[in-house]
Image 1 (cartoon, rainbow, N blue to C red):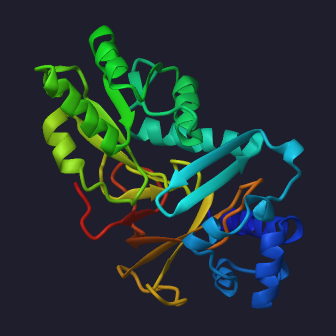
Image 2 (cartoon, rainbow, N blue to C red):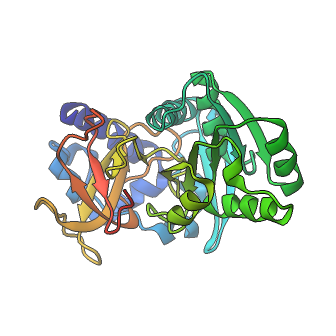
Amino acid sequence: MRELQLQRLKKQLRWAEEKSFFYQEQFKKKGVSHEELQSLADIAKFPFLERNTLYQIEALDILTIPISGILRFNVMQQEIGEITKLYTNGDVAHNVEMMTRCLVAAGITNASVVALQGDLSDSRLLDVQYALEMIGAAVVPMGTDYRQWLRLMELVGMDTLVSTPQLIMQLIIQLQATGKNIADYPLSRVICRNVQGVQNPMQRHIQERTKARVFNLYEPAEIGMAAAIFQCEAHNGYHIQEDYFYPEIVTFNSDQVVTEPHQMGELVLTSLMAEAMPLIRYRTGQAVMLEEDTCSCGRTLRRVTTPFSFM
């Protein structure tokens, strides 16, 4: 894995420096070049990408290819502004592959009936739908209209719900308003798409109300996909898609990389295979600790744990 990460990281940095105006300028300011990366530790020589920066610059400045090479546009309105993510055919394929792993880790099979709650104009939800169809699961797009939710809940026996915590709570409330309890439906699994952070503050409440097992995906708009880190059936932290993202832990409000084991810090992610819009050392703002031991699920992808991981 480390050899693969180094190989891909070298290519990603070279691609970003040669093709992206934004990274050309950033690397010049820092006085570094992709040629200086000879080991994984050398990534510390390169500048961080702050969250606010992505809302202050034009998406085309980061873009590495002509618009003619773009397969998908996604414009997302966030509390701090608007962000645009662009994807090539390869980017979409990589996202779907990662999402497929996440769904399988949550127990999705070709016998599953999965409801998607939300707006399918969101590229991240499209990735979920494509991955479900790759697995062979039955997909039930529920949209954003609560009347459609209530109708489909009666028509189809869904065993899995994929949604944001906020929309799940709206569904629970709307069912309750009609005198029904979501726990009476055959839901056995809820997959939460967490936009704000790795932690899901509503997880315990959702689990108590639905009587279903809750899995979490971390999908900030800045990353532009929902499968960078994910929970498996062991619920022992979050696996990192290490062949697609290189993780670092750095001290908060500092550039210092945390190398000691079992030390908490800020999660920093670098894309390894992004084509249209690479992310080099993106500071997520999430407090995590990197775990090196093998998960009981058998997956060898490293994990991060949060200060208050829900088991």
